[in-house]
Length: 202
Image (cartoon, rainbow, N blue to C red; front, side, top):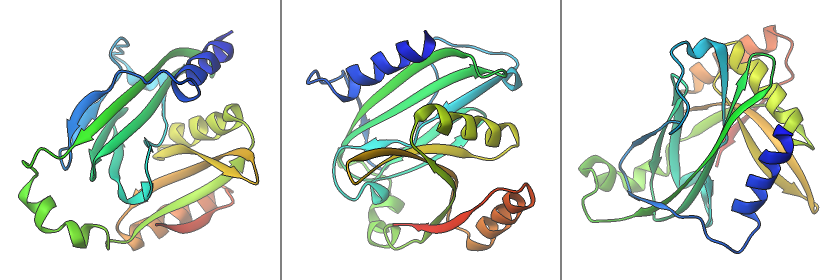
């Protein structure tokens, strides 16, 4: 039933012609995203499964920065456009407890952080790295991977991929600018017997 409800919400937001109501945010400004109607004093009792922000335009990898801290997402749009993010909260036995979708429209209001505006050309040249664990055909399988990795202390996220008209879900760990740190995390994953693929985020 929870899976059915999740699929209905997903179809409503991403497949229908109805455009979701979007919250206006500023290019270059970091916002904190957290569930609006779910509170937990003991966060360790839940799995917070965040999706990677989805950008409506091209160059999606250069359109944003994000990271997960204390079950909240810190998100910075780098260009104008629409972004969609989903969150599923599970119990430790992988039962869905809460789902929420976040829709944003980033606008350049001309009040960007000076460091962001002055270094914008350099920003896109900074190399970033991630570690792919697996690519699976269903969101349920991807969420199991993500939940297990998060329980082990890794910053895991899922990312949709369409290949030859088929939908896949990639499970990745981290969004690193420090190459050595990324390789250290990959080594930890290998010690836990994960098959890893170290790659640049283009």
